[in-house]
Every structure is written in structure tokens, then in C-alpha cells.
Length: 64
Image 1 (cartoon, rainbow, N blue to C red):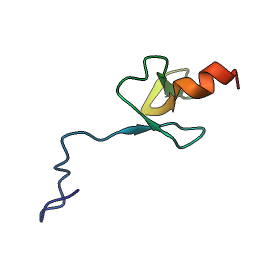
Image 2: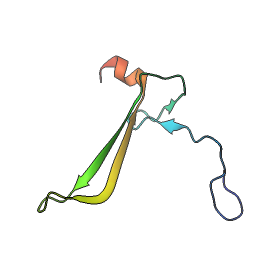
Image 3: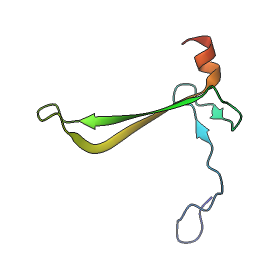
């Protein structure tokens, strides 16, 4: 939810699984979150941007 200035005012923003689009609940202790850094191919340096993936525990249990 946003206020009049466009700022996010929610107390909790639930994470969603990147693969299945399921909500990752607080008690899902098997879920993981991976942050991958973007690297320039020529210099091998970090470009400053990251990509985040969240995988829910149910998907990890299935092994897919």
C-alpha cells in the first residue's frame, strides 16, 4: 500500500518465489534467497547492479 506521496507504508512485504510465484511464508525455513552480481565481461568488475532470486522450500523439496 502507498500513501499520498507514493511511499510504501506496509509493515511487511511478503517475498514471492521467482520460479512458481508462490508467497514465501515466514515459517518457510527451507526457502533461500540468492543475490547475483552483474560483472562486466571486459574488465571483470562489478557493474553496480544485482539480480535477486527467491526460491520457496516447496520447490526445493521437489528438486526442480
